[in-house]
Image 1 (tube, rainbow, N blue to C red):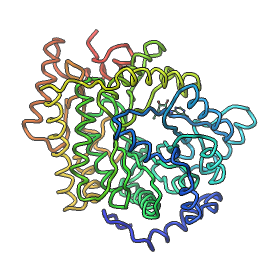
Image 2: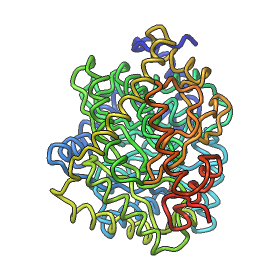
Image 3: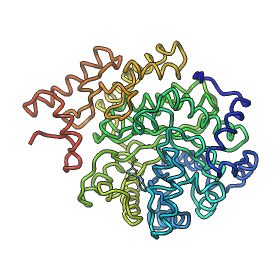
Image 4: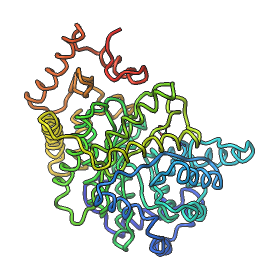
Length: 481
Ligand SMILES: CC[C@H]1O[C@@H](n2cnc3c(N)ncnc32)[C@H](O)[C@@H]1O
């Protein structure tokens, strides 16, 4: 495998497809030309890029849940419920964990078990096993765009089947679905495999079919500083654009301090436009994920966290918000709980329509620092790759120049330690090998020292631990007992 950030030529891509489509019998159902014709016949209400572009133009924030169950009819019923009772604008199909590990045999067993038990024995929809025809049943039963949400390092066959099946948006990327999800999968391998996915989307695009791509913004979802998630999002966006992707949603996971989170979404959009300027006609949107870390057990408190995420998404003017449920601390939500999270979110989005956070010096300062940190990271990534972003990314992880907090992957340095400052904004307690200027290091240090003074304790690893549990315990900043 020779990894470089260069658009795959068609012959190479078509050669690889033969091997990918043999990985499971349903691969035989994929006929690319037929699939393109099928996609072109879809009603506009099913095209994600259309809905996102319209929302962006109207400065609306659309809402979308996560949802997926094992069997087809039940999955359709669930999604219809979320449309009717949850008033969701956009639909997901969350894929089960076996499929995410390419373990289609176990997924098959799970389908049978679910049908025997009369309830979902998988934590998502096993789209590869169901195949193209059955994916189309789901798409045709609903009146909204469907996006594949998962966490799959090798997502090539899943992409082939779901795109041929009429899904119009595909989440993930070679970093964002590897480092936070896998222990021992090389970055070189997943960057390469995701070039295949993006080349497939680029091929649909060149045939006139708009498929949207959404790198997974939140990463480990635990105190990830904005400049880290922005660096990964922009790298995955650039790698996708090189393969011909034109419709991109870049994402960010809520940290919890309003000014920092609004600054994060606005800086993400501005940075992405800057870095993507050499690619024509990119339709860029943003997604804000409601808090991805530990939730309170108490449902009323959970609605507080959900509403805070909804308010922040609206004030940041993100194109869409991914919604949590009051069952977050318990596990997979019931369809009722899922719909409640959506209705609570929609209430806030509606109440905050046409309102915006007053631009002030604090917001400007946060944007400035996020941009500085992100640019300093990306500049080094390009240097390490001698101008090749894919090579630079591999080398940056080896050097700890890219480093995602609390990631399970052995390819992640894990030197970085984030902690909240006195206002709850996420700062670098230890920036590891991130290539930050003295000014940036000093800025983060001072913010944490100010908290230390308030709490009469030195900034320390204990703060990190306290912050990880804080929201679950009803706080934002993990104050000492
Ligand atoms: C990324 C993790 C998030 O995805 C959610 N999730 C994972 N699988 C499902 C599922 N099958 N239905 C609804 N939500 C789900 C989980 O509750 C958590 O909020």
